[in-house]
Length: 279
Image 1 (cartoon, rainbow, N blue to C red):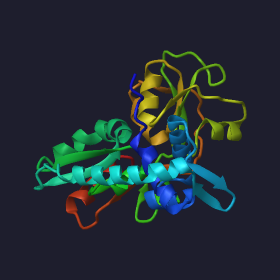
Image 2 (cartoon, rainbow, N blue to C red):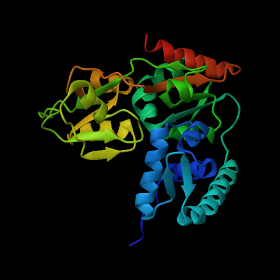
Image 3 (cartoon, helix red, strand yellow):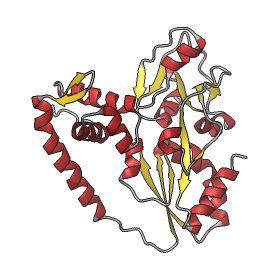
Image 4 (cartoon, rainbow, N blue to C red):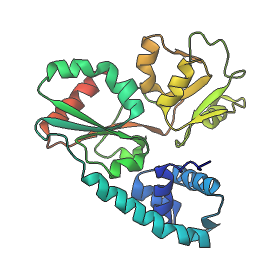
């Protein structure tokens, strides 16, 4: 049986950390939190079955396996970057490019998009799917909606509200947080562990996914209770697809930010429309 290829984001985190010999420096370079970079590298090490770094108090050093892997990963990432540049076939006239995760496209933009396209029928919109914050460094977009911290994206960007985390479940799901299967979105700094620190108890997730959208879809199907971004939850709650398993909104350090090319009129119109849709 062929072994599954680890996610590209894990390789990106490893490549940056290996060049800089620092998880903190890598996080700043690719636009992620230090803990997320460390988690991605650890996941890659687990997947490959080898240690890639020797972790010391004053920094990192590569193991023999890490030194062997680095040039191959660097070459592969460069090849993918060059290859992707050859397939930009979307017409350039009146095209607005929006970079956002599938979760944002599905749960934040899609329920409201018809209003914008009805007002601006002449605009063509191209969505570029992203998952991790560092993905925004590899795409060219007029509007970007990254997820991260104030330090990462706060400058020249607007934090979308309502922020925070909420626990959601299907209206047909009768379990409580204490008694139910919990769903965790990995790659973020805040989750069920922060919930425990804030409200007590010992909530231990059993299902792990790489996006809030996937967590919400699992909750809709009755698989458990998901802890997700409050702003993504609004339409799901309004439509009755999900209900709050607890009335508490957990404050957190990370959230969704909206930034745009202020020299692009279409981008400004999309930015203003999206901001006003939450007022």
